Image (cartoon, rainbow, N blue to C red):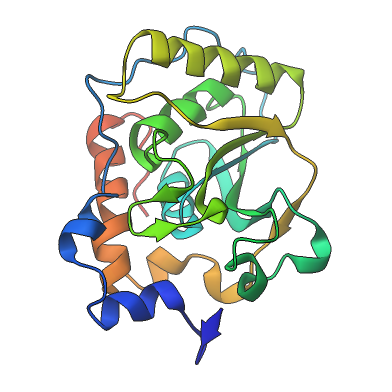
Length: 227
């Protein structure tokens, strides 16, 4: 739903309907210890190229903002996965009834970063993988945690990594991230693209998304790319 072209989540904060405490709950992942790197990963390519990963974990603004600052990522696009093209529009997706999840398509160079390294960032700083059908102040199945795999190799790396993290008790609670096949990705409306970068002083971005990028810089200095 859009009111005067401003997403409802922005209006809620502007009207004071969400407290600062609720907002900061999504500022980082509640880990019991540092999230380990995946023990099973795709091999690093020997020549430059392009591969794609699609993930979801709450509002796509924050996920996109994080991966736009990761070395080896060529582009990150906000959009929708898990539903059909006929209703892949923000106003309808926001009802939570279309089957979509707010997602981000990550196009990356596998000679610079591996699929497993992307998932390491995803689980460490991009979202909380233990929250079911919500992230911080955002609630609904459209905010669920999902890895949409494009092939068997991605599926194996993702499932093995989740099992590794649960066994290591990297989080206080069990990971609820779904691992499902990617059927399609539909780019979101233009006003959703680069939203965090274009609206750095917007309260939602300041409380929820800017801390994720800062955590990326702190926890992954070798992968962080300033822009």
